Length: 123
Ligand code: HEM
Image 1 (tube, rainbow, N blue to C red):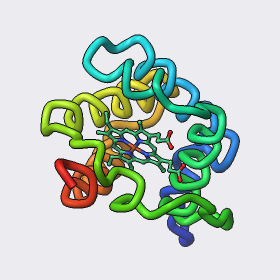
Image 2: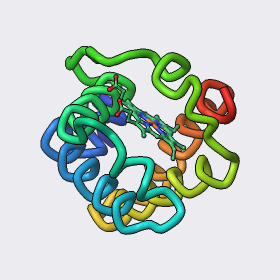
Image 3: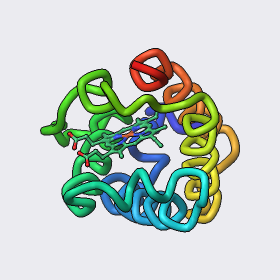
């Protein structure tokens, strides 16, 4: 057995893997009628994508630092619904699957995303 446990960051494929996953995620959002207008209305989707990559990397234990706003400040005033929150998480699970991430690791990401609901929904 491997004596050193692989971090979540490693299992997501480090920065390269997380960049791929995030691109799939944004593609899913822009194709999803339940949330697409939210992202289409962003003034700078490239910046959002870069921040989401950093957020994922830092949250998974990577060396990157997150340069964006905290989750509460980011989503404050957007009036995000429960349905939109579930949809965004579903898009993330689909992106992980498309990128070949194992079910156990997908569930770990699911738990992390779910734990943020109080900072995103109707804040
Ligand atoms: C756990 C779930 C979520 C996480 C981890 C998350 C994460 C993030 C991050 C890291 C950013 C970039 C912040 C920055 O630029 O400083 C962002 C922006 C954004 N999020 Fe979320 N988000 C989540 C859920 C949602 C939901 C459910 C919606 C609504 C459908 C949403 C809509 C947006 C929009 C529209 C932006 C872009 C704001 C802008 O243009 O500045 N997010 N999110």
